[in-house]
Image (cartoon, rainbow, N blue to C red; front, top):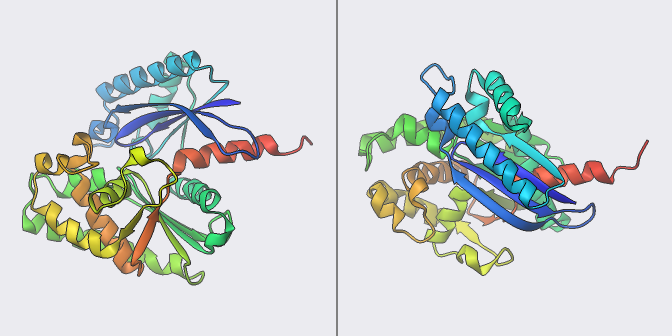
Length: 312
């Protein structure tokens, strides 16, 4: 079956077309990304602006057309933090569906964490033991831990790299006071939830997903993405500490010149590094491994699980 999965995030809208069958790994066939920055279209009252809705409608319509051209048999669309935060999300998504035909499901933060955990578990298998999976998105931070395919502890916090940059780091480069303030805020939020994630026992394997972790690993010396999925990539906490300090002294243009850092995400990389530092420090993580699979793959795998269930 050829599946089309549309991921509407705070920064990017990503269409992934895969050939997927129960019992087999999903094989990517086509990828299409648009830097929509949907979170930037949230008004002070948390409504998604008319301009944001119009841009979202255009992007979804284009994704539907591409999916049809690529022979997609089933189209799955979901939205995360930016749409989840919008007070008028139900009305907006109803209008988008009316104009494009796409039914967009809004994932809760906890569900997002569980699906990402499932993807990491399937990628690494049972031999990885008890896993802790950390995902730094544009609008939120998701963490999940567990021994099985279903995480036994999950949390979602409003500590996304884009959100923190907009709310706490308005200057480019930020002032030392701004950096200290966001660092205090991030660590206080994480500290409230760290114990619950570690209560289930010793973690054997820590996994990082998301663009933020991939970029941090790349500037710390990990292999570039063009070397493929199967090259192991790791990120040490000591490197995160060092790069958080360096990034704080750079402006966006300087960060964009670093290897693997896109211009669209350069401004928020510092906030992402501050979150990564806080999580790894407070959770006692010396090193994590970068997982190629994340939320999109989790959605695909969950759908395949349903298809594999015997008919009643």
